[in-house]
Image (tube, rainbow, N blue to C red; front, top):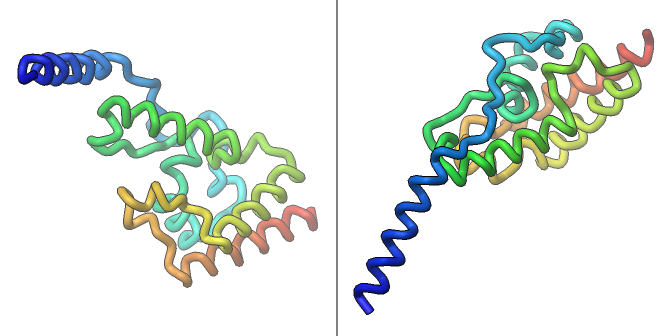
Length: 155
């Protein structure tokens, strides 16, 4: 019995070591991406930029900041899956490539997700407490999203 448990533990340890060699492609851009960031394209106020950078850009831009635990498989695979999924919905680094209708739609989505407290995701906040939005930060982002959408519509 002890021998079987010992073999199982050894196999698990070896597998954990082996999977470390299979790392996903990281989402790092070393500065701005080839496309305009939303902050450049929309003349975003500094307070909004700070909030989005702190709470949203890790998943919704090409400038992810990785922590030590994001580099350990299988957690690294889950993190990259979540980032790719987030970027399918919204990538702030690609904002300059979106047409006016898409921008207004995304700004409405930003407003609604922040208002309903669906973003940032609760699972993300477990390890990233500082990304949580205060009530005043939520109001700043929602007001900005409304005003930015209205400005795009007026153009």
